[in-house]
Length: 78
View 1 (tube, rainbow, N blue to C red):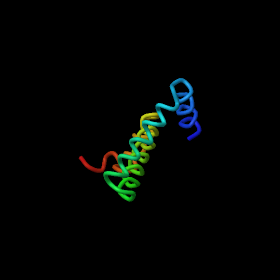
View 2: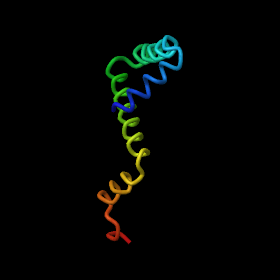
View 3: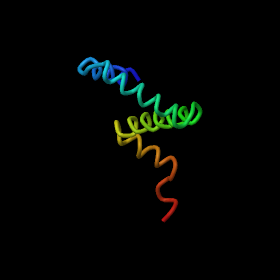
């Protein structure tokens, strides 16, 4: 988590933070106007979950293999 926050802060420091945050809040405002609060929260939660799962999965490919071996043990289905 600390790595993610430091990457985001480095990104904002290297770019114009005002433009980036204005775009983020514009997108959030559009989502709220179009879908409403509950649907927007649903979209945001699943987006963040997908981001975190993807970042964990692609950071170390052995974690994916271990998870799949626990879920579908090798040798049982042939």
